[in-house]
Image 1 (cartoon, helix red, strand yellow):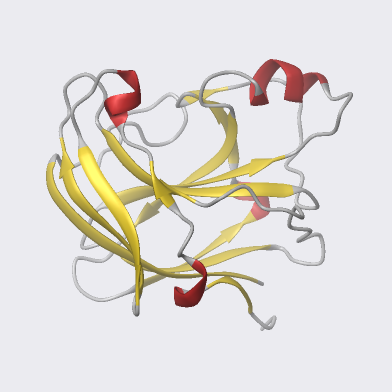
Image 2: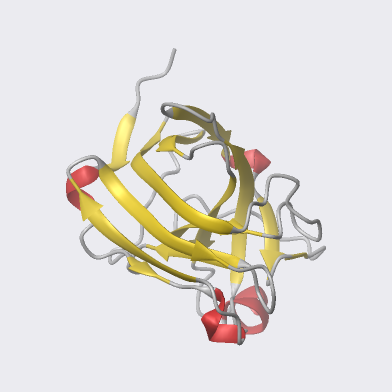
Length: 186
């Protein structure tokens, strides 16, 4: 079994910030804050006019080079919700995808759904190859590759949208309180 290497743990969540559907006219409200257990996302999700709450990491400087690894492992107390984990990559100064996608509202994200247990922590492995490219929850079909050598940001969401272009079958409006304990690579 490959050895895990922590990328983000409870002491590294201080600069994460919330991004909710209010940026597009929705009324969900949640805040994220670092705790001794990890990154807490607490608030209320409202489905109308948006339907999402999230926490985003700061933009990494320098970019994360994870090319010696195969994927992520997340440890999260999601209380039975189906969440999304998103990763942003930098494509270089001459990359067409950067100009067209990273500069668009929402930008290019590589995402996967995470089904969590109702009680206790869920530990999930996410191979890089399972991440799907998306812009504003819509699947994109441009032939681009995940750039594990230039990761610029992470995002954890609970949204009415799940896999790119699909609704989230595990979406639950109402009060939310989840804790992301760690992000590791293997």
